[in-house]
Amino acid sequence: GGDPSQPPLFPFDPEYSDNLELGIKNTFLKNLLRVNLTFFTSRVTDAQIPTLILPDAVTITRNAGKLTSRGAEIELAANVVKGLEIDYSLGLTEAVYKDLKISQNGAEADLSGNRQIFTPSSTSMLAMQYSLPVKVRYPFSVVVRGEWSRIGKQYFDLGNNIAQPSYNLVNARAGFTSKNFELMFWWRNIGGKKYIAYAYDFGAVHLGNPETLGVTLSTRF
Image (cartoon, rainbow, N blue to C red; front, side):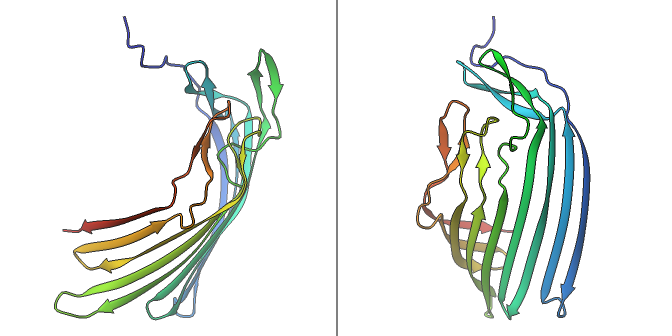
C-alpha cells in the first residue's frame, strides 16, 4: 500500500561551493551617512537544480554541472534631517551555468552558458521614511514610509526560454508605533504591476501579488 498523494522520493547529492566575499563598512558625518560595499564570487559543483516531472507535475531536485556567480552590492543610508531617513541599495549579479547537460526529449541538451534560474540580474531599492515623535502621557510616533524597488530580468527555466523582464514595484505605509504596539495601514504594488513570480518548464506561471491594501496591528510585551 501507500499514499498516492505523496510524490516518490528521488535521491540527490550535496552541492559544493567555493566562496569569496570582500566588503567594507563606513560611516560619515557623525554617523549621518552609512555606506556598505560588498564584492562576491562563488563556484558551485554538482549544482542542485529543480526538475519538473510530468505528468504528475512534481518538482524534484537533481544534480547537474557547474555554476559560477559573481557580483557586487552597495547599501546607503542617510539621516537627512531629524526624523527623515533615506535608504538605497543596489545589487548586481552574473550567475551562469558553466557546465550544464540535461536529458531533454530523449536526448542530451547542452545548456552551458545559460543564466541561473530564479536569479535577477539586478535588484535595487529606494526608501524614504519619516518618523515624528509625539510626546504625551503614552508616547508614540507617527511613521510614513514609501518604497520603490526594481527587479532585474530573470529566467525561470534552464533553457532560458521563460523570462520576466525588469519591472518596478511601489509600496507605501503609514501609521503609529510605540513601545507596546504598532498600527500600520499599507498599500502594496501601487498601480497593480503584473509580473511573473514563478514559472514552470511547460509554460504555466504564477503572477505576483496584485495591488493590495490592508492594515496590521501588532503588540509587544
